[in-house]
Length: 257
Length: 365
Ligand code: SF4
Ligand code: SF4
Ligand code: SF4
Image (tube, rainbow over the protein chains, first blue to last red):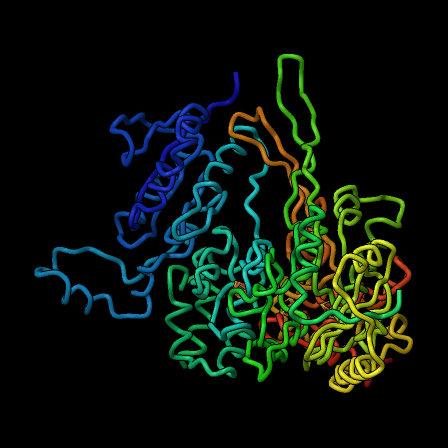
């Protein structure tokens, strides 16, 4: 009998988009369901099997004291913990609060802010517990998710390439919009995963998969600024879904000064 | 065959003859705000009246004042995407009751007619021929595609600011490696044959003899390209220069600018690195071995058992430049650079290898 890992999917501060990516893998969903024993996945089924689990997929970032406790329990219950998506891996778009005054937000949004218990920051899962594998993306790519599950079942290394988005532009024949149109694009410093979708539709890369290994963000930002893009335009570009990833964060803070 | 003349309004007869012979005609066409190579059906698909303006990290299309069909130089694509495709499945395996059944997917070999190949590109194809066909290991995918391809070259009549073929002795004149070569004049084309296949093809075109005046005019427009070229790379002793300066401070300085994004290697018409990976379905019953373009700038590309061999941007840029311009000579008997300038234009931060070589030469040890 092949190994059928007992799988759990946990949600923290997030939009559920990454979990939905799993359900989105329509044509392969039954294969996935056959390959793993789905023990805890509230988005898909109300069946709840208690831990421990072989594999935990963790979506979302840590934004409340309660979640900071809960992730420790998830870690205790899970042999292999994998974060899925930009929120879990880098803090997500909600990490914008890290540059703002959270108590001000609370006053604006909630009628009775005193009932809300929240942290001043949105942080990655790895800031709280050890993480065994990070699957990047906002949202994750369901082909990659299926690949990682296939690798877990087979006991091999997952094939989730770490190269830049540019490599995928070139493989698919997209003309570089940074060079041919002067569009500021984060592709050169962003890890691939999407297959370079945005440049193919005339949009600069938004950095959904976070910084590529050894990303030289400063050189790219300096070049865009010299070519006429204002630092004020680049700061929000860097402070997207992966804005709090160290390499993007460092550069946006430098530009904002 | 002596040089002949084809009226501009008759160029379609060349396309028709090629298509009639079963070729898929590929050539320059305007798409995505650039001149790219793609399938073309008629003369109207060519970039009539367009030109390109190039500089480090910048490319723009502009309107010409005339109706020239080939009035630009090389763009973001190169012919390597046809001869050496970005993704190929080289093998497959299926689990059966009797064990693994291995197979080689039979890929149909396309028959391409390349129209509009420039001198530096002929040289680049020649470089890849040495890599894929002339060493101890012949690449069957490249070989089949290459042998089925017919080449119609075009002589440059202008150059971009990024061109430096004259430094690499690869152009701008097309001298070998083509079936037919065209030189565009306002009224038509001077046609030269470079092979028996080209001579036979020319015999079916409505050509007339080229007059002395036509030939003189062709010389003149080709000379314009030579005079246009401003960029130079001094290649004197370049192998020893680079390999003797592996600790030059310029490599450190380069690492502050280079993004290690892979664009230069992807657009380079001679770069040939690939990775081979096994891709399986969820049950592990069907496995494919895929080969795709990869790059020495990719961090993972230098991963060997236990770690990364080139674990910083400095060592990756140095690997690229020293291979391209120095150790390539030891390996294949020629430089890996043909002076097309693509890596300069398509580098997102405009890093220019000619400038880097000059800087190293200036303070070489
Ligand atoms: S469009 Fe963006 S991602 Fe694509 S090659 Fe250019 S810089 Fe890289
Ligand atoms: S190294 Fe640059 S200039 Fe030389 S052949 Fe490659 S892309 Fe062209
Ligand atoms: S030289 Fe330019 S194109 Fe090449 S890897 Fe460095 S930044 Fe990218």
